[in-house]
Image (tube, rainbow, N blue to C red; front, top):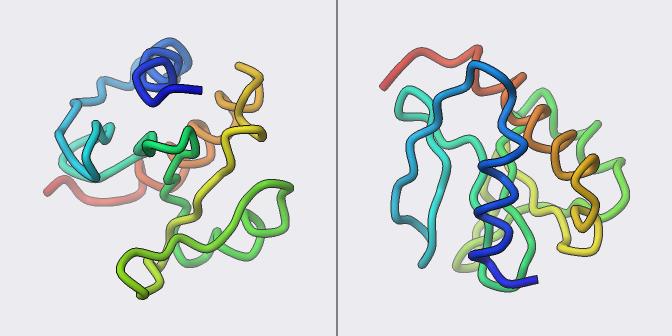
Length: 109
């Protein structure tokens, strides 16, 4: 799936009342809430999802999730979810909700 299509789908599944800003990041768009990244669709159709350090174990236990690495470094508190895993709108919404559950605990930046 193309990144632009995934961006549109994320817009459609954002939890009610969540007003996310879109910021250019990772060569595409990241969805930000109060200055904190929520999710970011990636060019290969996968999606970076913020889950927090405490949410990593549970997130990584889910099918299609892996540790987020950039430039050979692990990005703590974030996972990459494969495009196949989020092909279904319900699955996409669950991952966006998982990110929201974490991000809403963070102070605004």
